[in-house]
Amino acid sequence: MNQSLSSIQIILLSTILMMNLYTFTLFYIDKQRAIKHKYRISEKQLLICSFLFGGIGAWVSMGMFRHKTQKLIFKLSVPIAALLSFVSIMIVLFYLS
Image 1 (cartoon, one colour):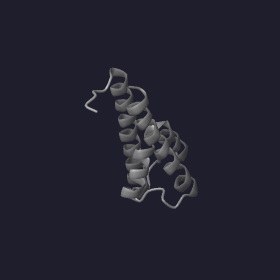
Image 2 (cartoon, helix red, strand yellow):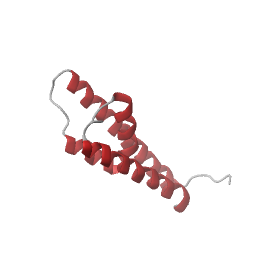
Image 3 (cartoon, helix red, strand yellow):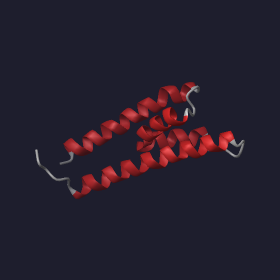
């Protein structure tokens, strides 16, 4: 079980990690802008980033910042996006070796 990751696995996992960090940051920025009554990041952009492998970051940020937790579309879609991100990670780790 002491197997190292291939280059493609490292690249894919890094991409997924970066997308999750980016999405997490987007939710944080949008929350801060909401507090200050400034120009907001669109819900469409937040959801698109969530489904482009940023679902885990979106889900964590929703809980951590209590942002978008009352919106039904986010309550339903972000956990699905997080599951898709998790499944993608598992595929990269176990099926692309």
